[in-house]
Structure formats: structure tokens, C-alpha cells
Length: 338
Image (tube, rainbow, N blue to C red):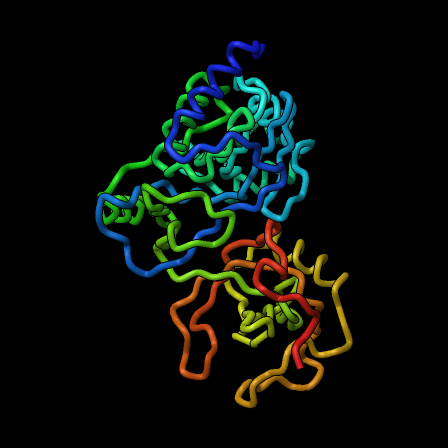
């Protein structure tokens, strides 16, 4: 139970931080986003965190009741009752939290496939909320408090938390060593953040990610029929978004298991359209009728080995379906390009 004295004590701790402002942060705040960079930043002005392989999860706690939501502001509270209860039992009445919904393997590493399986099976008890930022506490705005101070206070808030809540720890400096360790452990990469940075509520160069392989997210704009014993589809036609318009970047047919072939084929069937979704370059030779076009709403993440001279992905392979992202997240606001 949170007493008035306890709440006052937390407010005093929050207000004592340099940059704290005695005002609330509205529920539904937009998350700060990462920029993908190729080089690991050097120096002690950066801290390094685990790059959690999961879904972004934001928490708005008000008067002891929490709303959990995705980065697209979809309400996930009902899907994650254990995590919701854990946040409500933190010993504070009001907070704004930022983190990642994850499933952990035996080694303590995040496992995206296990996360998807737990959500599909309706087994949220197996999931964890890895929290890496505290944007407000007891109606005190901490967004202009340097990150290192926000994280220190977050660690105190989570000190006696339920095991479903994880404090996302960090190291200051040593980014090259952290990245090498992530590669050795076959993790996706690391996240680096400026120690003195504010919470910007937008994409910022103060937060960057360095990935072990080249990966990116693309919109599915069509598919081809399966060949031989394959089911579902043959390959997916992909597009990136440039200046708000779709640009064809190639096809991906590798990396799909049977379950993803089935699941994606079901979703694609509901999005079919008779009109070409994107213009194919002259050098792309697909016979008429070989493509079934779809409205661009499905986002997938793909690994690839660079861009070929003609602008197409080299050796693309499917990694995952991004149900937490939309066409608008990739910058596309329309339905098709001319």
C-alpha cells in the first residue's frame, strides 16, 4: 500500500534531480526511438544496454492503476495481467515507464520466437517487462533529467519489484567490448545512449542501436504463388518508404517456417487488391499475373547482405513479423505509389 508519506518521499527524490519539473507527463506519451548506426560510439559520454529482442512496451501508472500499451498506443493491459499487477505493486502511485516486453531463454537472453509463442498461446506469465527508462514519477516530469539520473532513480523504484519486472542494466563506456560480447553471444546487437541526454519523445541521435547483421523493416506489397511442396506463398514482394512513397526493393522467400507461411498467407488473403501496389523497375522480370498485390499494411523485418547495384536487397532472409509496427511507423501514409 502506498501511503501519503511514501508518495511524498518519492516525489522529493524525483524533485531533487537536476532538471526535474514539478508537473505531470500526460498519459499516452510517444516513445523515444533509436537510430541505426554502423559504428559503435566511443567514450564515457555513452552508456550501453542490452538490445532486447521483443516488443516495445510503455506504462502509464495513475492513481495506482496502470495502462500498458504498445509503441502504436494499442492497449495491452488485458493481455499482460501479471505485468500490470507488478507495476501497480511497485510502491508508487504515478509513473511513466518505458521498456520492452520479452521472453527469456535459459541463458537470460531475450528470445523473440518464445515471445511470439507465449502471446499466441495466451501464456503471458512466461513474459518479462525489461524497463530501461523512467520519464515521470509521482507527477514529477523527469524528461529533462539526464538519463543517468533517471536510471538511478528507476533502479530504486524497481529494487523490490516482482520478478516479472526487470531493470535494464547498463555500463558506461566500453561500447566496443559490449558489442564484441553481444556478437560472441550471438545477440542482435547493443543499444547506446548519451549519458546526459534528455528523453526526447521522438527519434534521436542520442539513442542509437548497433546491429550484428544488416537488418531493416519493409512493407509487404505482394506475393507470388508457392512452387512444389511449399505452402502459403513463394516469396513476398517488399518495398521501403522514401519521402512517403513506396519503392520496390526485391523479394524474400528464405527464412520462413511452416507456421509463418500459414499465418502470413491468411493475413495476405484479407489484403488482396486488383491494383498494383508499387511500380516494378524495368529490370525486374515477373510475368503478368505472377504477383498477387496486397494493400501495404504488413511489416516484416529482413536480414540481408547489402544492396545490389540495381537497388535490390542481396540475399534477403525473413527474420520476423513486426505486429507492433504499422505502415505509418515506416513513414507511409497512403495506399500505393504511382
